[in-house]
Length: 88
Image (cartoon, rainbow, N blue to C red; front, side, top):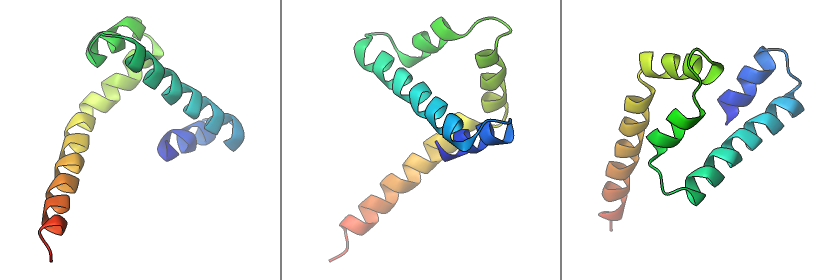
């Protein structure tokens, strides 16, 4: 969220507007995911217009390996939680 807010500010939005847009974007995505029985990939496809803003943003995330970074971060946190749980 912090990065999204900073990106909004970098793009010329006030910090307050960038924060509100970020929170509404994330809240909307979570609410859609909670109320839908569709896989997140299907939901993403439903809101991604060909050549649109979401498609452009997703392209950068894919090119930079965002999914792999998130997976690696979750795996590292999981492994560390196991290590910490084994301490006595």
